[in-house]
Length: 234
Image 1 (tube, rainbow, N blue to C red):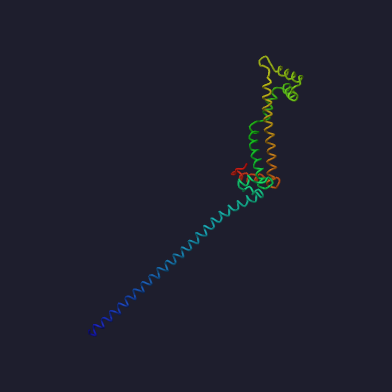
Image 2 (spheres, rainbow, N blue to C red):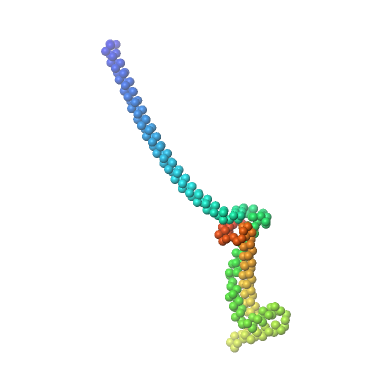
């Protein structure tokens, strides 16, 4: 091979090396730029993640804190009555002198009071007494006197005479059945009122024993009743 051809080949090889090197340099530069760009993007992503995390932390933290604060207030309000969180089984087997046992006694007393209050509110003792009194004092007095001594013949006669005297030219005399019914209705209403009043006293006393304090304010009673509402206690 001539020296001229050999020289040309050497020149071509050197040129190819330079071109390849240049391409590699340009490629590496592009790759570096891309990596740098991704790095910045990731940095932005981190910022976004940090922002989201902070936002989520702040939002959920505040929400959780609010719930915790509310629960804490109720816990503080109930005090010893927090024992009402016990299970139905615990209530069923609780000793009468234990905190759970005292809360159970209150629960049952409150249940009785609620039922008796409904009965008491269903009748009006004052109105029913007015019905009885409308028969006149001669009849009502003779009737109550006879109730106190039903075998007394003098009182029997006095009552019969009082009934007969109620007759007029247009209306018949009152009957013993009418008077007795009016009296019994009135007394039933009085009995219901008295039973509700007694039940209220028992419930109030049991609540004080359960809470270990007197008096127990209305807010505490409401909180306890709400806590017990979902339980089955006998």
